[in-house]
Image (cartoon, rainbow, N blue to C red; front, side, top):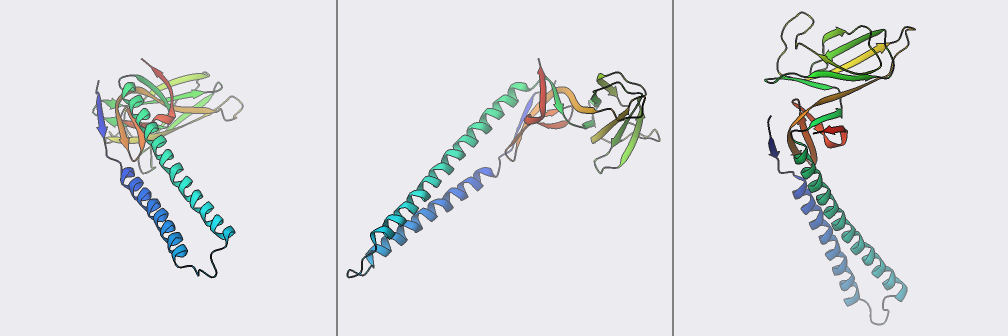
Length: 220
């Protein structure tokens, strides 16, 4: 079992600092303009009280917006930290997640996992490479309602071994009346690693990157 954690420094931090600096600059500019306006007003024609009150209200709104942005940044960091910790704790566990991906790697060929919401009379699985090109069609015949896991040999339609990489699959099923049977496709396997990239926390399952939000089931 591979247990590893890949840490990638996200550019989010720089972006967040830039946004914060820009917001603070806006606040300082507003204050300077207001002070300059007060200093240079005509003593014989001072600023109207209602106008001054309105500008103070605008300043209050700007300040509240800045505080809200800071609080949102803190919440986002907390959520990211919690997701990262959750992902690390899932390494080595059996994961079932929504998805239509499988991979060919040193550890072998991933399985095609799906659930039929009704009994099928005809079932086909179509496998595509990373460019979307159909490389293999599997005739799975009649299948009962429920979950199914199909082992693929990693060969194309002509019997040639396909290269390492990530592939996608689509399952189509029809009942005895020729009506389409609803199919749910998913990925099942052990979490090998956790990755943190561009603000998204994911797990590596059977060589496929799986976002935490797509996980349906976890088993020890």
